[in-house]
Amino acid sequence: MAVIAFSGASGGPGATTTALAALLTWPLRDGRRVVLAECDPDGGSIAAGYLESRVMGDMGLHHLQVADRRGHLERDFWPQLINLSEPGAEDRVLLPGLIDPAQAAGLHQTWPRLGAFFAERLQHPEPHRPAYDVLIDLGRSGATGAANALARSADITAVVVRRTLRSTHAAKPRVQALRAMLEMHGREATRLGLIVIDEGPYSARDIAEKLELPVFAELPFDPKAAQVLTHGGDGGRGFGKSQLLRAAAVMSDKLQGLAVQEQQRLHAPALRPLTALDRLRGGTR
Ligand SMILES: Nc1ncnc2c1ncn2[C@@H]1O[C@H](COP(=O)(O)OP(=O)(O)OP(=O)(O)O)[C@@H](O)[C@H]1O
Ligand SMILES: [Mg+2]
Image (cartoon, rainbow, N blue to C red; front, side, top):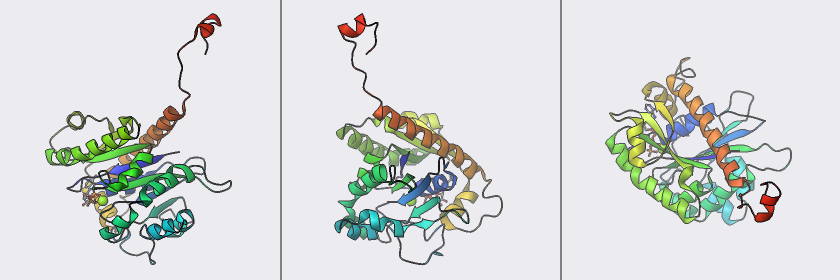
């Protein structure tokens, strides 16, 4: 049970690459599946990049605005998905992002409903239908605009950042906006953390101190493997075993664990103070 949002910032720290690496390495337990929803208001890039426009058809997020207005968000969601699984499987799927950033304006009211759909319906489907963990690419502006409703319904949000001053600087207003949004909705900012890409002169700890956030995971700077995720190509036999994908598998495991912990924390019964009667009974509530 996990909904994870990834936020980028200007300068392209690697949010989409990281989210796609998470999709390809996500641990699938108990028959669950995983979907990556490319919700970057500035437009999606995986269909034209990693998939090199090889998938025919006009699937994607842009259809969901009209679908939502007609009350068919759920029905029309499924035909938009592209299967990125190993042959014969259907467990890793992609909702391709917007083709044109101008389409984002029309999604203003759809973002919160899409967030609720991810956090509720896909987690608790009808009997005999698989449940989906959800990865959301918020892009560089998703953290600060209307699309941050998606981060509100995510279990955790990871801000992707490099170990440079420029990247930290660009991430700062996103972190502040996400923190403010969570606090405004009575959610604790414990749900926020960093994914640090190992490029730059500073340490991950420096970046964490500067942004006052924990480091959820670190990923190596691996241009060769990143290039495949960004622009396609098969990457040869080394791709699956690349440093980036191996570290992404560790990251995915960690993120899934953190999301589950967050849900348990939210649903744990609140402890009330001991009453005099409880004390007489030997200290039980
Ligand atoms: N771990 C990595 N190691 C090396 N290069 C990387 C890594 N992650 C991403 N890159 C490279 O950085 C560039 C930007 O990556 P990406 O498109 O994922 O960034 P983004 O944050 O999604 O940017 P945008 O705001 O444009 O959507 C790409 O060329 C990609 O290959
Ligand atoms: Mg991107």
